[in-house]
Image 1 (cartoon, rainbow, N blue to C red):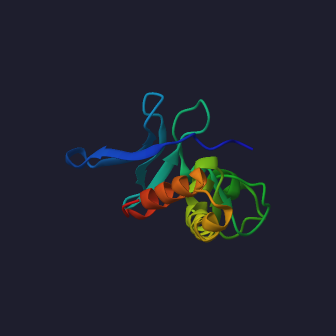
Image 2: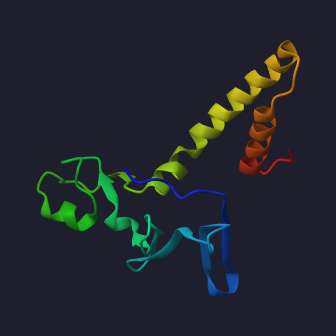
Image 3: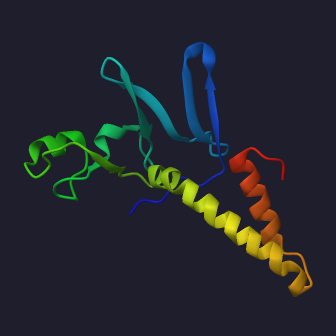
Length: 144
């Protein structure tokens, strides 16, 4: 299984050129995700696997129906078990991380609540509570 792109990540782009992308703030701004046209009206994200160029999401799609090992629209069209193109996921570590973000935020908020309630009992402050507060603030736009 591939690994997600190490953070930190940040949104970049230019409104004058109609571009926006997610990239690292290190390693020469390595792309995590950007967007490209898909048909006449749509757009799709693109992801960059380890050591490779950007790959359209359509080539990484996983489907609800049929052989679960099928990846990508072209492969699905060739496999008769995929008779509906309903998407269940995108076969990219970064896409999985993005999709899991709300669950991770909720878990971190519960963990922080626990740490805040036990700090006094332990008689010390925990660095992990400060790190959790900072990460929650970054995810929610709040002040830490």
